[in-house]
Length: 77
Image 1: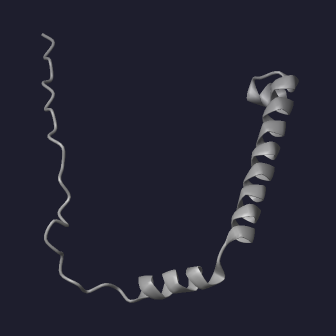
Image 2: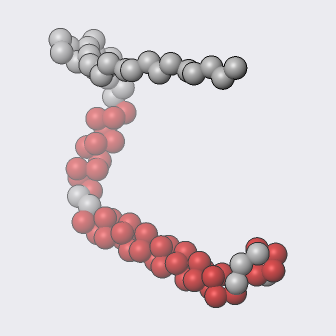
């Protein structure tokens, strides 16, 4: 397998361990978030989002964009 990848066996082992640890940390993060969640607040959020808005923008709702710099392309002869 390491011959196909062009790396040492130790490197493949290190990558596999790192991937597994990342998966375990991610699963724990989600479990912690679920345990700390407030089901009533979540249900209210879903109800609010499903209403679809329909209101006109209010004064001051516009997004102010920062001025952009135009770059000049240099030409090579």
